[in-house]
Amino acid sequence: MISHAIPLFLFLSSGLSFTPCPLLGPAYPPFSLDLKDEIIASSLQNLTQDFDELTKTFSGPNGDVSPNTTFSIVLFSTDKGDAQDDPFFWQYHYTSPALKESSGSSENVTENSIYRIDGLTEVFTIWSLLITQGDRILSEPVTEYLPELASASEDNGIGSVQWDDVTVGQLASHMSGIARDYCGHDLSSQKNFKLAGFPDIPAFELPCCGNSSQCTTSEFLQSLATRPPVAPAGVTPSYSNMGYQLLGYILEKKTGLDFSEIVQNNIFDPLGMNATTIFAPESSSIDVIPVDVQASGWSQRTKGSEASTSMFSSVRDLALAGKAIMNSTLLSSSQTRRWLKPFSHTSNPANSIGAPWTVYSSGNYPTTPLVDVYTLLSNEGVGEGLYSSYIGLVPDYGVGYAILSADTISPADLNVHADYTATVLEGAIKSSLVQAAGNFGGKYAASNSTSNSSTITVLYDALPGLYIGDFYSNGADMRNSLGELIGVTNSTNLSIRLYPTQLIEDDGASGSKQAFRAVLQDMDAPEDFDTPTCVSWMSLDVFQYGGRGLDEFIFSLDTTGKVVSVDIPALKLTLQKK
Ligand SMILES: *[C@@H]1O[C@H](CO)[C@@H](O)[C@H](O)[C@H]1NC(C)=O
Ligand SMILES: *[C@@H]1O[C@H](CO)[C@@H](O)[C@H](O)[C@H]1NC(C)=O
Ligand SMILES: *[C@@H]1O[C@H](CO)[C@@H](O)[C@H](O)[C@H]1NC(C)=O
Ligand SMILES: *[C@@H]1O[C@H](CO)[C@@H](O)[C@H](O)[C@H]1NC(C)=O
Ligand SMILES: *[C@@H]1O[C@H](CO)[C@@H](O)[C@H](O)[C@H]1NC(C)=O
Ligand SMILES: *[C@@H]1O[C@H](CO)[C@@H](O)[C@H](O)[C@H]1NC(C)=O
Ligand SMILES: *[C@@H]1O[C@H](CO)[C@@H](O)[C@H](O)[C@H]1NC(C)=O
Ligand SMILES: *[C@@H]1O[C@H](CO)[C@@H](O)[C@H](O)[C@H]1NC(C)=O
Ligand SMILES: *[C@@H]1O[C@H](CO)[C@@H](O)[C@H](O)[C@H]1NC(C)=O
Ligand SMILES: *[C@@H]1O[C@H](CO)[C@@H](O)[C@H](O)[C@H]1NC(C)=O
Image (cartoon, rainbow, N blue to C red; front, side, top):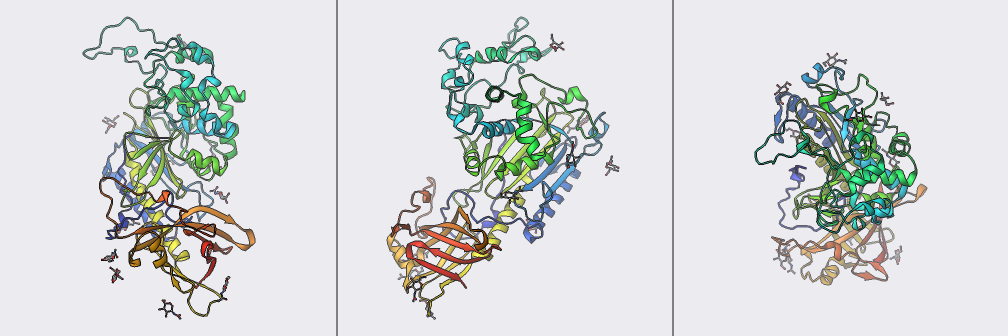
């Protein structure tokens, strides 16, 4: 995985020396994607122009691409907005002249064109596991479900996996430390392999079943069990297709169904993903097959790889899947929140590991907050096929991308394509700030008060969150009182920033409520330098009055979503929006 350099938050060049310490999560309340919004419309227009330029010159600010790379890309959103009827709100397709010459292939690729998606299969494997088994299973040892692994493993040496130590969740998050692949990658098995330094070995017997297309599951497990590990379980991320092959076996064993039936029944059918299959579909005019079926990897069908690298799909179907994941269509919201979280760091501070996500943390801490992009890139390289595929989800803003591609020489590095979408993510964030400022920003006052003795003013600037300016409770200046609590003697130096907690109450005919928490900071405190000390999560809810947190602000919205008032429970205040 090549790391991106998405220049997020360029627009937040506020010139303020103050560094806010926001909560993890979206900086603004849920927004509505409006394609007519000036910022969104302009960023989409620019994106189309960027791709027009890229497919004319094959180079650009994110790097070069090959004219031989055919690709389809879509952007999708969980918000109904005005993109309601389509699975996505923007698309772009490029058909390489080389593809048009390939026999059996699409003439022009579209949203319905079918590509091989290889490693993106993993998303559907773990998703099916969560739908059918829940996530308790993630902390169980693998040997609970596949006991033959433990008995097949020989000794306690460096060459054996301690299968009792490996959990199902570690298989899903590439933390199991087990071998990467089953037996496809042995260089000695390549005809005419000649590089200096490699000893001659007799016709090498791969430690897998003789003819793998005839192996039974138990024969597979016998040979998988004896492959040497990379590391003990839980030590370091180490990508493993074999881990997902094992998850497939666990699913089949638990449900008594074939993997293909499991994903069909639980995901493809409910979501209407009619173009997605395990292994190559019946040949049709929408297939994307560069060179020929052999060279492209289209016809490659490794038994046992159903749950790791077998799938074929279209960008339309991946958009349906991405939206359903972020919108908790097939899982509970609490389950989705647990799934869309990192499981481990990697050695790259910008990347964490999920199941199976590579979580890319964009933003430029500590100047800006993090925005996590849950990505999966499948790009196996020469020898495996000519396809690469990429999906990215931004749960905080409900937007995502899917990119499918096929090259004629070697799989494309889709980071170049993905990086262009950063402008739209920036646009979505900017647009959510503008919407939040318009709706939540302004003056609030007690309705029964003849003077302005209880008031707050909600403001915004270029930084994450909203902030409170004037703040009076029963005539007393709360900025002074709160400043004293955290030791800020001059209250002009007190920052009170509001961040949404995503506690939302739908009260039907009487509207809804959204809770925020305030983070108090001394704007004059020295900036973080080498050792970041942003720990606002440790002081949430710390000051209580009458059993309620002083940092609690609950906004009431009417049925049209318009903010009407704010409650400050600790101060027993209800202030109407003026
Ligand atoms: C689109 O591109 C124009 C011209 O480069 C630029 O001025 C504008 O800010 C861009 N729009 C967005 C939303 O980035
Ligand atoms: C594109 O494909 C042509 C013909 O297959 C090949 O000669 C050329 O080197 C390829 N270009 C790149 C950049 O891969
Ligand atoms: C997402 O879920 C909400 C609430 O269940 C629903 O109203 C909305 O239509 C869903 N959006 C999509 C794109 O499915
Ligand atoms: C493919 O695109 C070209 C150029 O836009 C067009 O001339 C041609 O008719 C298209 N072919 C099909 C089958 O749609
Ligand atoms: C492996 O089995 C498949 C399916 O039975 C068969 O088509 C193929 O020829 C066999 N390959 C070898 C090397 O025996
Ligand atoms: C899948 O359904 C969509 C929308 O109904 C349709 O446009 C598309 O042609 C279908 N694809 C396949 C492969 O049946
Ligand atoms: C205003 O209303 C609040 C309750 O909403 C009440 O506690 C307070 O005493 C009232 N103030 C005056 C001046 O009537
Ligand atoms: C409102 O409060 C401000 C700040 O204390 C004060 O300057 C102003 O005179 C007050 N206005 C009224 C109408 O009481
Ligand atoms: C507080 O700080 C502001 C801004 O630096 C300054 O104008 C003001 O005089 C200070 N007030 C006190 C009481 O020191
Ligand atoms: C904070 O207050 C001090 C005086 O107490 C003042 O010198 C300084 O400029 C203030 N800083 C900010 C950011 O207002």
